[in-house]
Length: 397
Image 1 (cartoon, rainbow, N blue to C red):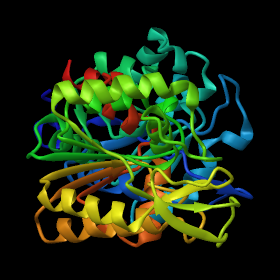
Image 2: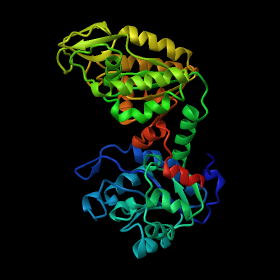
Image 3: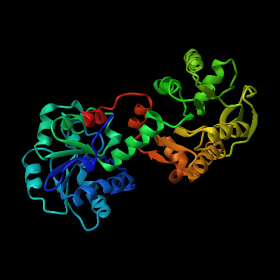
């Protein structure tokens, strides 16, 4: 799908409504992680450089259409100002209406305006046309830089794009290019690594991937369910036994599409779910009845490293074991380091996303070595599932 970027649209002298994601973690009224704020700076700087006036639209928390002081975007203002030294950052008490119009009209050059939480209006999450029109009245151009909110058809992500000339911001542009390179038009062979606890939460994902990738690596608790589906006992391991038939259907579909599924050939088992619990490595089919599988074993990692070495594109969502409990992070860390090494050598395009995934790659110390890491969470997962994202589709309309 084609979409315009900041390079394709005239911004000089125009008020530019920019949908951003500054839904950052807070403690005692202070931002504890400003990553999301830092990621929108290139878009804001480019709009300013082109003579535009950035007016930021964003949500914060889940106020459900009520004005909740603890969820005011005013709380984010100091961190936003700190991320933009030399730029005046102002605040408007609403995202529509007289207060917002007055604040936009008062903007000078090299000034950024942050509007109040869009979700203080009940119409935002209903994609209310009247609310979208009220927002659109504040600007002449709309820029969406919030891929993480693009799977929601809200007034500020979808409705407003239908009313103004529009483009993708730099963060959205980078995300869409990375995703296109990973699954849209990838270099083959393509490997997908999917881990996590439950098959039931990733059915759409697995169903989509077996039709698109050459190799599908299944790890974590999900792998246990697939082992059960093949008649392999997994002791007290986390496994969705009621999903065994579904797992068999996915295996069968993979055979017809030519996708090779990789499951653990050896596993690390323990008798307690805790860090540094006594453990041993056994073949995948030899888990003791009173033990649980907490990680993939070294032979499995070795086999995966060979698959990675032959691949040209890799997409990763979810850990291979109970990575939050050492030493059961070993398979995830070693596999991630192999991917990072191949990426650094220019042999692999690697894209990863999802909360646990980002945490695991940070733990392995390789997050900066992947080609692209998405922090978009649900939007990244829905894109991997092959679903249309309303906020992205609207940019192409």
